[in-house]
Length: 116
Image: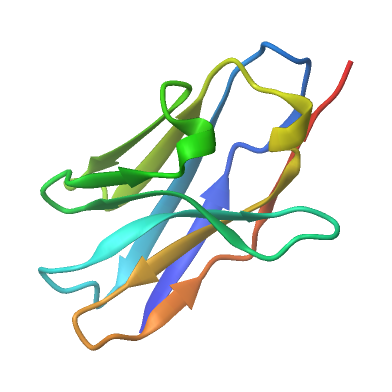
């Protein structure tokens, strides 16, 4: 069983930056995809960015050029560096893990609020 622990959310002004972290523990295996989704108050849970162990990445169009996802394989940790944040980036951000067996695991979520 894989467990995910997220950290790094908070309140930031428009134009500011935040970095989210997600630590995976347990039987993560060799092949997986990790990343972040987000869910606003009235929205579905939407893709933000994902990465494989080999750093093959995928981004939502709305965050390209502003957000960067990276992975530290030695620490089993994925990071999401968020720059030039906008109010519309306000959401609960969920870390996700998709393993070789096709099971998707979700973290508990961390709130990101962009407001002046």
